[in-house]
Image (tube, rainbow, N blue to C red):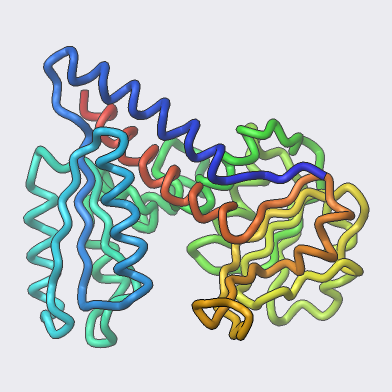
Length: 291
């Protein structure tokens, strides 16, 4: 069993981007620049955005963090996005989700110019992904592809089973793993809450992507020997033995599944770091596309 360590893979990507950014600066060019918008003070969102800003600094990217009040109007947020759309010094725009209930996620995502949509959620980006034309891929699926590539996981001709159909992970992964490219060329089955024979499906999976947000859902009896397991989930579970009072669990029951797998991502330290790596790669590509 090989541990598919996202921290190590992400570090390799960050070092590569750091070198490329240094080379740009030596030529007298500016660094790539990511702008993030954070509405309100959601604890998890604060952590995610802080991590992204910190990583930008580590590799030499420029970054802007716009903090906006919880009660900002939808029009006010859209105006902030338009300002960033029109700023030639900003290459990528990220609006941290979830947003307050009075603001439409769809309107906000569609307001970001497709050339700066480094989260890969804009309808134009999604359409290009489905069509197989160059575009921004959502950061988590992109990070998973980069992880599979880093560890040279064979995907051609494999049966990939994706559990979960969200537009953030499950659906994009099903499309990307079936594309005629590497990583890809899989036969893909997508499972969800209405799948009646889920265990029968997962037992066929050479590659399983678990992205349903339910702690330790995938157990040892649902996985065949030698499967590659990508665990996207991360859930706080009460744990009195921990100083924090909780433990972080993935969608996979690691202790049962790991011995049967040929490769598996840990939680934490697997897909999480790769999501940020995917976002940074998208930001760099947005910058390069304007050169």
